[in-house]
Amino acid sequence: MLYHLALYKYEQDQKTSQEIERLGSESQTLTPIFQSLTPLTVSIKGVNSHMPNTTSLTQIQKLYVAFYGRPADPAGQVYWAQQLDTAQGSLQRIIDAFANSVEYAMRFEQLDTETLVSNLYRQAFGRDAEEAGLSYWVGQLQSGAVSIGQLALAILEGAQNQDLAVVEQRLSMAQRFTDAAEQQGLGYGDLQIPAAVALLQAVNQDTPVDTIDLTELWQHFAAFSDPLPYDPDWSPELSPAGFELWFLTQSALSRQGLDTLYSVETLEQVSDNLALNGTNLRDTFALIRPLITDTGTSEEIYARVLDSVIDILNSPPLVESELLSAVILQFQDNDDDPAWTDDEHFDTVGLVEISGGAAIHEVGGDFWL
Figure 1 (cartoon, one colour):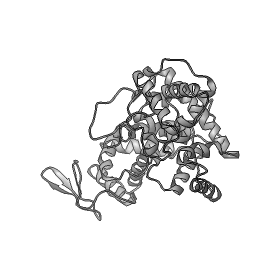
Figure 2: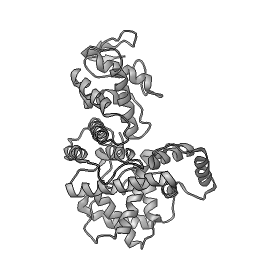
Figure 3: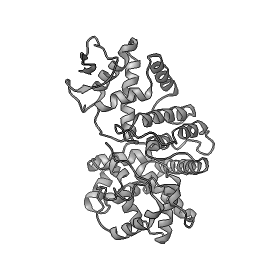
Figure 4: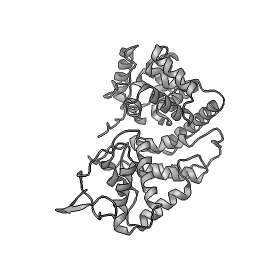
């Protein structure tokens, strides 16, 4: 199960500051040495000292976008901006904390150098790295001119022309989101992170950031703000509820004309067809998730699941009892590295043999492929 990002408490602030001081110029690798101390979703109750200056707040928002591809949570932005003020504008120790955080490691730790650079390009600019840029940044890493910890921010701050326009738009949207989260009391923790990433990924150089109506998005975030009952089978950042919120976020953004992964027509078709087949987004995800690997970010896994559902819905009509079985079989075709075999056991209901596909056999009330 993925690591649960804890919230900061006020009494931990001093301990955190001491740990950052101790690290200094130590390891810049992606090893999450801050696992027990510095998750970067912060409780607002833990921030009640001086209000940082605007320059520091802006710089911290840039770090959140560079390292995590998402807006800062309100208390996290204030907390780290306070640390930046205390350090008289020196970012190095805060960069170390971000680069060694659990969240950053979860997104990028397992990647080779070229894939890491490519993923950071997509996160920052919404595009793949061009050959010259990829070669340059790989060379910077290999020569030691830039460390792993410095890379995300260096790529973001190296933006030019259209890339710079995209970054400026995403930073503007990120601050708008952070301000709204604080003003409206929107829940913003592990569960909401993939949806928040989806928001920034939908922003390009032409997005009317200041005028677009995000009311529907705020409503979805508010609906998922209350803590969910603890479920040992799921971590918040990759769960049926998280998948549903990510899906609803895609829908809300698509209706506003943002550059989403899916059209509003496609997303509405998915919702309507799942309902007609007697199931829903959470149940569909809960069935598929145990059958796939943990490779990729939460939002990438969510997209892989949804792609499989869409493929099934574009196939010839299925009877009600066949829908979820067909989704599983389709997902097996879509998954490059399935984490299950033909004799893998799983518990579910309503699974039947699909003509031309794998047989599903009932054994003692459970089902086997």
